[in-house]
Length: 145
Image 1 (cartoon, rainbow, N blue to C red):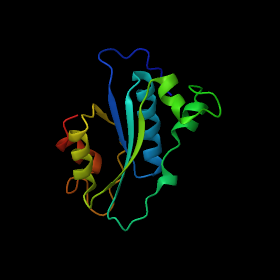
Image 2: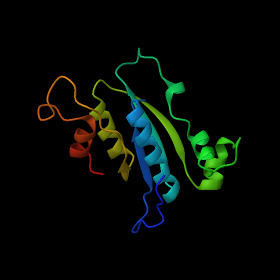
Image 3: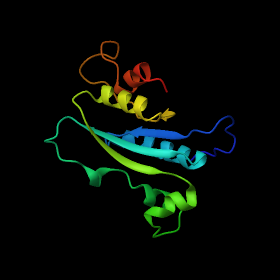
Image 4: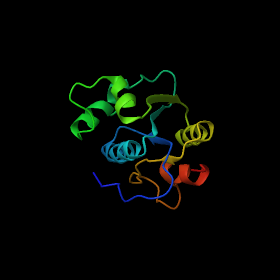
C-alpha cells in the first residue's frame, strides 16, 4: 500500500467504492479502503443488482476488518465496533437495485454527498471503447465528485 503521509489538502469525508466483485474491483477496494483509513472517512461499498429477484451477494463483499487486520491497522479478531472506535471510520455495505448501474451510482453520489468514488475500469468487450464508455467513465461524466 502506498504511503499517504505526503498527501496534502483537505481530507476526504466520504469515499464510495462501487464493486462488481471482480479482481480489478478488489484492487480498487484496497486503494479506496487505504484512502478511507488515512482520512478517517466514511466508507461505503456499493453493489448494484439488476432486479429484486437477484440474490444479494453479501458473502462476496470484500472483508473490511480482515483487510485492516492484515495491514496492521486492527488487532487480529477485532470487533466490528473497532473500525469506528480505533480508526474513526464509519463503514457500510450497500446493496442497490437498478437495471442501470451508472444511474444508480450517480444518484447515490448526489444523495449522500460523496467526496470521492474509487472504482475499477474494465476491458471493453463487444463494442469498441469510443461507442460505449465504461461504467467508470459514465460515473465520472455524470457525477460531480
